[in-house]
Length: 65
Image (cartoon, rainbow, N blue to C red; front, top):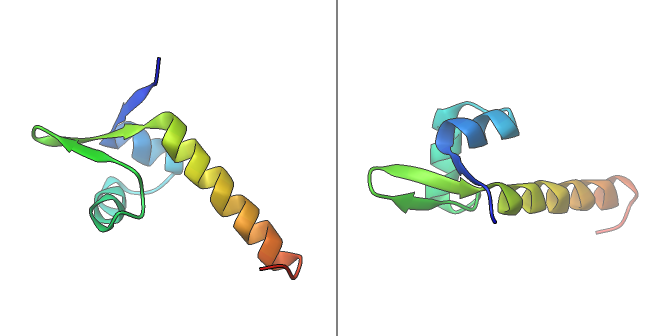
């Protein structure tokens, strides 16, 4: 079963301020869903996003785009 994180948990996982997390989620830069009065985040989707970002960064450092 997929692990669902609160905004505080997702911000801690990403090591960013919760306010930054909300801003990025509203822009669609971080995968999340607004449920009721708060945001929820899939841990798997966030980890996939981080891995993809790291691969892109590594490619750019190696001279590949």
